[in-house]
Image (tube, rainbow, N blue to C red; front, side, top):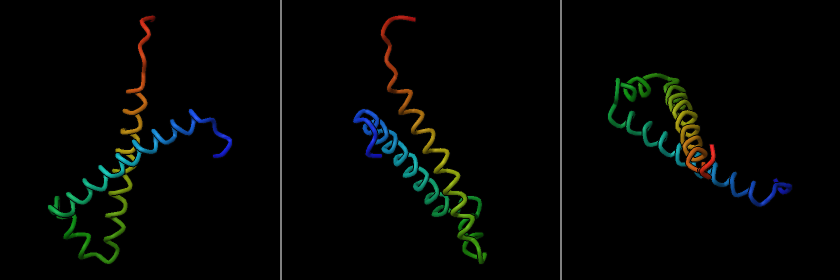
Length: 85
């Protein structure tokens, strides 16, 4: 990563920040789903031997979805309009 230009490093930091916000939102939603026992997820996960795997899969799916959405929003919000079509 040392051969990147300064503006490329700034943009990767920008994307990383948005990715972190998306992953944090996924962690919050996963925690809320388990805390409120939505669809009996916590009950099912806590009674099964491999219940942790289901929790990891839920979190991973939400992290990928929310992280990519947050990065997409970040990229699209940087668009500039210069007055020409």
